[in-house]
Amino acid sequence: MSLLVVGLSHRSAPVSILERASLPSDTQAKLLQDSLAAEPAAEATVLATCNRIELYADVDKFHAGVAELSTLLAQHSGVGLEELTPYLYVHYEDRAVHHLFSVACGLDSMVVGEGQILGQIKDALALGQDLHTAGRLLNDLFQQALRVGKRAHSETGIDRAGQSLVTFGLEQLAQDTEVEAWARGKRALVIGAGSMSSLAAATLARAGVAEIVIANRTLARAERLAEILAEPGGTGVAARAAEMVAVGDELGRADIVVSCTGATGLVLSGDTVEAAAEGRDEPLYLLDLAMPRDIDAATHRIPGTRLVDIESLADASADAPMASDVDHVRGIVADEVAAFGAAQRAAHITPTVVALRTMAADVVASEVARLEGRLPGLDDKQRAEITQTVRRVVDKLLHAPTVRVKQLASEPGGAGYADALRTLFDLDPETVASVSRADLNDADVKNRGRV
Image (tube, rainbow, N blue to C red; front, side, top):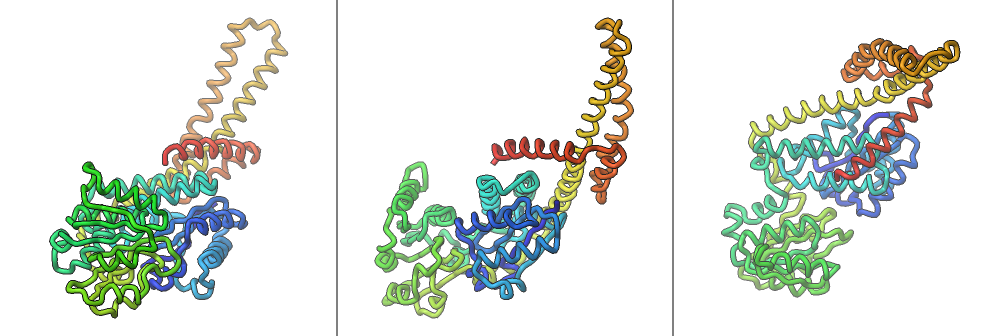
């Protein structure tokens, strides 16, 4: 089996395609279930963010896997396969590992170095675990990606090379003014109460806005976020909740609007924004972090407004971050990819080595039993000494070749050593497979407890 990733992102596709291809959580679950039902995939999980959709799978056939995963992405995204295909990228084996590790470090983000992607990778792994579609390979891969991402952020200044999408968006709204000076005293409306909206609300509160209104389809979630923001131990900002039906009224009182919901249609139409902007002395600032977009793109043309959305953020993020930090992180990724590949190749041969040692132990037990039948007069001490001697001989004979074969298997091109070992010692394939299944079950239990 081999690792394959098929996906699209802000680097390969225009925002208009990403908007249409976005996957709600229930669609992600169906995509994973259908991926396992497809013959080439043994395990799968999906990484879906506002600017990327990537399907990771363990497949037994490359070309069949690419065709099947591409078709599934098209079916579940609602974008036709012919239209979607030019924007898809494919990574296989070590290149797939390299891609995910780069994503985890923020090297592939719209804003280089942003750390929110780590939480999204964690969520992708948790989804695969909850649906039992992520097996040993994807558990190991995503767990390691999280560790690599954390290492990059702790050992380098990649955090300073870029900012979170929220901070970057607010900086674009503020233009040449410091965000704190620009936001101080303004009234903010945050639409949505998910992780991105919560981050936006907290960022605005720290920047010194006078009031924050949280609007959400589930009022209880908006109320909870408002309570957290207003707590003395939190930001202490004046915060309150509002129902979505009141967004139009709240828009007329707001100076800054940040929207990030999971809605499939527009939350703010051009007419609604135009009505709220009419007669204002100061511009109405709008930040749309949703994919698909929450705010009508026509807002760009409405006088008295300034809209920053995912598309304009992509254009603005072309400025190069600190080159030395990026180079350092790239070095970390390269080292970690090599280490992960070696560990996976070594793990691949372990069931064969275990099966060989099990067979050797059975041979020892059989020969000792035969000896006891031919020499019934042996006492317990003699029998124990003979048994221990035979075991030592077998262990010494197997030690050097099994240690060496593990070393060879961990090197590039070492996958064939497991097959050679099975052939040389005529090992039962079902015995090897049973060791693999037991190892997989143990790994699944262990990994589920680590997320």
